[in-house]
Image 1 (cartoon, one colour):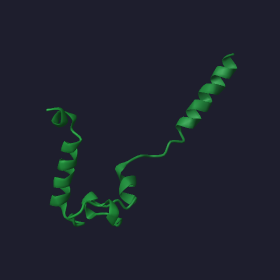
Image 2 (cartoon, rainbow, N blue to C red; image 1 turned 30 degrees about the horizontal axis):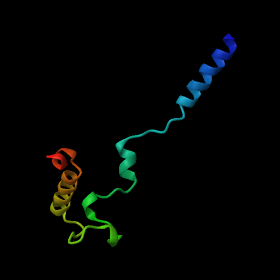
Image 3 (cartoon, rainbow, N blue to C red; image 1 turned 90 degrees about the horizontal axis):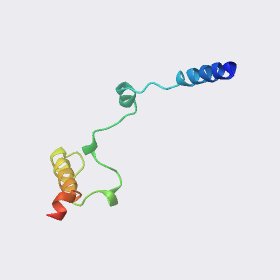
Length: 75
């Protein structure tokens, strides 16, 4: 019984050492771009929006958030 418990604890400790590091440095290496730089798939982009325009992107995000706001819908 004690031997099984000891082996189980050793296995759990070993699995814990296999976790990959998750940091901002790894995210930057992925080549992420700013969200307002735009998408290449035109059917999914809001009409009238130009890629790279940060102000229009922020306005669109605020508008989208308000249309999903349940409080605004009920009042």
